[in-house]
Structure formats: C-alpha cells, structure tokens
Length: 222
Figure 1 (cartoon, rainbow, N blue to C red):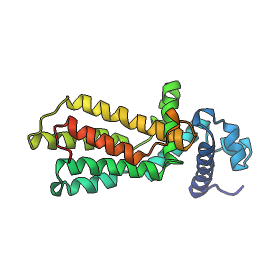
Figure 2 (cartoon, rainbow, N blue to C red):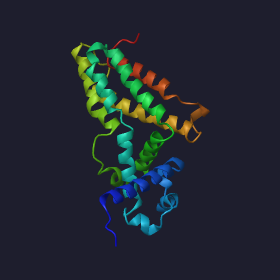
Figure 3 (cartoon, helix red, strand yellow):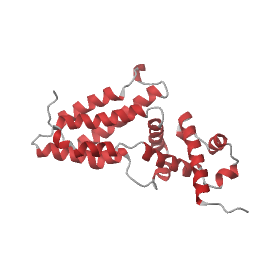
Figure 4 (tube, rainbow, N blue to C red):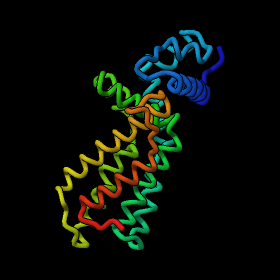
C-alpha cells in the first residue's frame, strides 16, 4: 500500500474545507449537515471521515482560513504607524473606513459566514465554542477591541479630550453597533430581508458610527 504523505493529507483537507466553504455560502451555517459537505466534495463518507471526525472540525478549519483571508489587522497597524500625522477625528474615520471597506468587499462571502457564526453562537454557544475555541491567532474584531480601541482612548486622553461616557461603555456601544451594521447589511445583501425593506450600506453606517464615537470621546466633527 503506498505511503500517505503529509502533503497528500494537507491537500485532501484543503479540498474538503474549500467544499465546506462553498456550502457555507449557500446555506446558513446552522443548517449545514455533514451530508451537504460530502455531496459537495463528491467523496464517500469514509473519504471524509478519514480526515475529519465531524462537521464542526471542518467548520473550525473553514473559520481558521477566513481569519487569515479576512484580516484588517495589517491595515490597522499601518494606520497606527502613521497616526501622528492624523488628527484624532481623522484617525477615527480612517479606522471605520477600514471596517466598512472590508465588510463591503466580503459581504456576500466571508462576512455572511461570520454573521451565521454569530447566530450559531447565540443559539448553540457550546457548539460555537467547539468550532472557534481552538483557533489560533487574534481575529480582526478581537484586534479592534483589544488593541485599536485602547489606542484610540489613550490618544483621546493624551490630547485632553473629555469623554462624554466611559471608555468601557463606548467600547460596548461600538461592539453592539458593529454587530447591528453587520446583521442589517447581511440580511439585506444575502437574504434580501431587512427592517423596512431598506438597503444597508456599511460605508454609510460606519461613517455615522465614526461621527458618534468622535462625539462620545469629546472630539469635534467637522
């Protein structure tokens, strides 16, 4: 029997993950079954289970790949490297522009799957933790919350701006607003459903969010 190389295993797993990714674009993640993935790959059940023990292990690799492909961390780090040349208000707008551009670019693929994972986390938290718990590295939103926002609040304090609410509450507001923008944009673009039948533009909504954050941090919107 020929020896199975690590390269062969990696290629097979990549093939399966890419098939699962395509299924995720067609159906809500919560509704996907292992049979969906098997049919998409054209492999037998044994051909799948030889490399993955269950569907959630495959989805974990799907999300891991997305975390690499859909990363705004490099863009934000470049922005912060040149932040001395920006006013506080300009920096806020630049950050939310990065968020808006990334969301609009991936609204029908990666962003749609991220939204589905959020829904899964609400309905099946233990399963969601199983899928994303072992993934290494910081997500783009994790970087925003743990690095970008603290940098913004520090700069706000350093230049003498007076917060109109606590940094903790502002951070919670940004997180809630981000999820709301994501939800409405996805419902509108992917599922053709949104409140009042409106089309939601991430760029427009993030611009409004930027203005609100500037106000809450004590800045001046031109």
